[in-house]
Image (tube, rainbow, N blue to C red):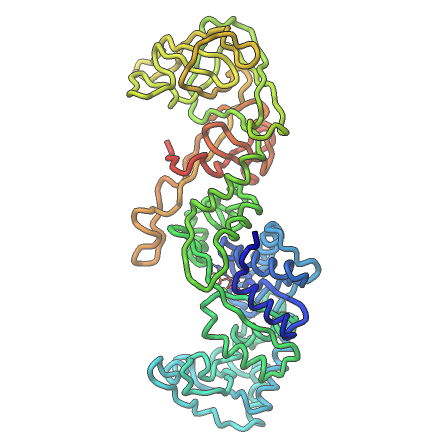
Length: 551
Ligand code: ATP
Ligand code: MG
């Protein structure tokens, strides 16, 4: 079936057919002022995808024109995340700050043409003069400075003769334009501040609206794909490209941002959670930063699938977190092994099983994928099972263990509960049962009995004690994402640490990013930060069913 092409593909097709461009060159232009999040993944995958589809080129370009918030740490994390998502920039890694000389020259082009002027108005005055949506702006009193004077003053701005905010360079466009962006926007400001790349070389820095189109033009970008909030800036984008006489005019096309319902996505909100210590860094597994999703156990494939399902359009919409979870389940279901892990253990003693005996039982690693083979699991008289798999006084339709009831121990035997031991406070310390040797699972099964419940277990003799972490949304969904002051409404149960889980022996050897299904409990990944050799810490990536509630 022919897939319908989204509007950006249609626009590119048209441009190529009409000979506007000979090939396709796209870019992802992050500002290194934080970590990337799931929204950025959409932009990365779209930009990279277009370059790939049309046999073009994809640039990773740091839009680092604002020295106040940018840091090398963010440059490194962004490179890691973009590469991890599979967007290969090859040798095309660029920094807007490397174009400062060219941008300055372009600004001079404007000044010489009488299309830019130096103004002494303060930021507040500029705002005041700008007018509103319903009222035109007023001309800046410095708008009529001569070209010679402007050239001299701009030169002096560059040389550091003026303090921050004393002067700016403005484009001379139209103070009465119905589009406020066109009312003589500021294109250079003074900031006596070191830049992470250029150091103290500059004390004037270009503004985003001026810098961005020039960066695209300098790199020969054909299609500059950006989000909808830049739609009203497009006339300005085109104005700069034209008036600066850029040889390869790029074309801006806007698409809708990716939003997730009830999820903290904005960089500045994530930053706040990191800075106030609410979360364990930018890669906290509860965040939808790319680093957080990676640490949580998401795969690049699952994120690409998700972005694909969300689609590319101009209409604003919100996606559900459940859809991202669906994508990771789909990805992991056939590919990972299903092992047994008990998150909340209680001892189960099989009183009629010989003491000191150990059997090795066959267990398929993934019944949906025979290629993953089988393994041997050890079985003996004392096991651990989930506390939730036993009830002393069960309700109707409870098919797991209770006194007198028989269940299947997965890959092993049927057992019948005979009673419990309790401590003096009445807490169950141990469950007793008997097993039926005729019910060994596999070819040796020779019983006509049937049971309704199957539970998992691990052998107490060689199970490894590990920590597992279960997550819920960091947002309190009942209250919504933000309160009146713009703080995140936190869910107090977003992290549950189970620090005495027992897992099959071989899981004790898991290393960073090893992924498994723990049968009945969900998909888990060995945490890359907190796991130690022989002592993995597991993060639950996602439960098996979307309706799953934390116990
Ligand atoms: P935030 O919106 O989280 O503050 P940002 O827009 O400030 O992020 P940039 O580094 O400027 O972050 O973004 C780089 C690119 O990613 C831009 O082209 C931007 O349009 C795009 N982008 C940012 N957020 C989203 C999103 N939610 N969906 C799709 N693209 C996005
Ligand atoms: Mg931005």
